[in-house]
Image (cartoon, rainbow, N blue to C red):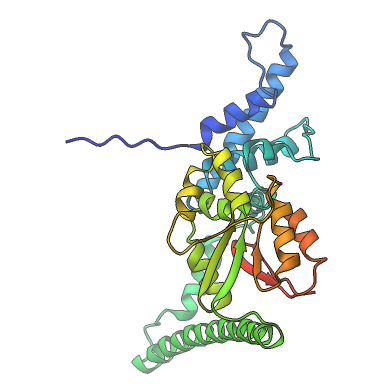
Amino acid sequence: MCHIIKVHHPHKFIYIYLHILGLLHKESDPNARKEEVKRSKELLQKAWSYMNDGLRTDIFLRYTPETIACACIHLAVKTVQHPVILPKSPPWFELFDVSDCDVRLISKMLMCLYTRKRAPSLDFINSQLKLYQKEPSDSNKNEEEVTDKAYADIQKCVKERAAKNSKNDDEKAVKFKELRTEHVLGPPFHVMVDASFVSYFVKNRLDIMKGFKDCLFDKVIPYIPKCVIAELERKERRFKVVLKIINDHRWQRLHCSHKKHIYPDECIIHRVEEHKNCIVATCDRDLRRRIRKILDVPIIYIRHHQLTIERMG
């Protein structure tokens, strides 16, 4: 019995994306100059180097190969001997369905590898070890004191970290308690979700219902308008997994009152203007900017891979 395992690796995506962007010049191309071929080789090698260094981090567990490839190219074009200017408005990596936030986070993680302080010398390590090692003249009592001190330091660090996490959770709980008291929003929370929000969780292999639970501390009923579903079905090949998730029995579908088909963002804006009894979950910056102009409509968005809720205007 044998198993065939297919794995997508950023190595080939870097090569493909550079070719699509027109930054890859081969020696076999008669129109390519030697200088262009040399620069393209340098750029490709630089991007691969960043990808290989990324194996020292956990980015391969947290992000898709396509996202990692775009981040490596993003760093490579800025750090080669002859920097390359890529489109910024709109960003070039949107062509490959990669978000600006993910590219910046991966780039920051990779650059942290090169800004580490120099490793301590062997003499320094030996001098530190001697402070805690038992000397021939020391008694068992001194050894126990050193052990107790080290254990006490660890316990103190653990307690401080637990107290800090507890304080953050308490602040979150107070915030949502005020939210429930001041407005007619209460458990179970009704959350209207758009396509960008669900796509983010699918891309990063996260549990969307668990994310809602951790954010709102109570039961959540996710809603998705028919206009959003129609948009997803129109691009079924791209959003196949997203459609499978929203077919879950916990998801409620909202029937649209308008007769003509309109853009999903317009449908969501129209709904929250009429009924201000739901929370909107979206990763779309333009949609968030428009909803902020509507009073009493809270917004859930993603920040540093965690759900965050904005206070109502």
